[in-house]
Length: 285
Picture 1: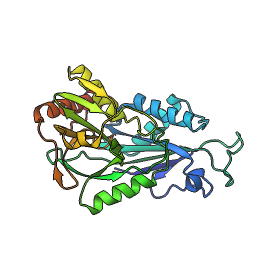
Picture 2: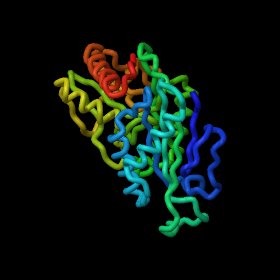
Picture 3: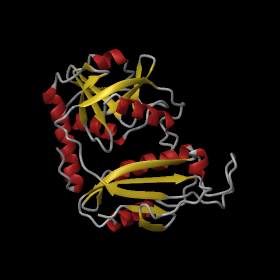
Picture 4: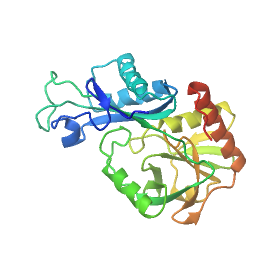
């Protein structure tokens, strides 16, 4: 396959497409992004990802110039240019503009930018549970916006790697928020439980799908404040994201957790995998 890069209408090999020096993403992280995957040129859950992308744009007051249909067409063009029927990850972002550096918004004549990348994808080895660490959540109070400002997430991910782990659980005091680049849910007494959405938590598409699947399969669910003691004592600890889809964790900070309700976890996981296969034909697991 070809790895594809795209910037404001110019498309080519990923490492050859150039980005102007004055793109506000470089100076200020002044933009938003989203990620999904595709298989056999079919985009997964695109309406959900577009909803979040345009909502993030609105909250940052970025007047993006493409309609949902036009943006989808540009993304599809990049996926098709990758020349593969296999799985790919699609990332796209928009910054406020490419314009002279100034903290205030640029004139409306300076249009928002569009960057797209398409790279190869492969699923996790779902037979291998994830290992997690915990770290205090030091992010700002706009975590519900999928902005480009991800330094705390980067540091937390690095700390997880240094500890030989796959992800970092973020918490504020004893309150669970999410992971560095995933959502965290738990199963307890046959119920799917996750933190309620607010300004501290990204509205994850995979999380949304899992709650939908729980309803479809008759599994009780609840969104509310979740403390870390509940995570430590959960029957199952679930990590979900666009790239991880739905995976279980068996250790946190080197101590065993979860793995006590394998049947219910695998029921939800299989239902999610089946959903992906029905929509785009990609067989996971």
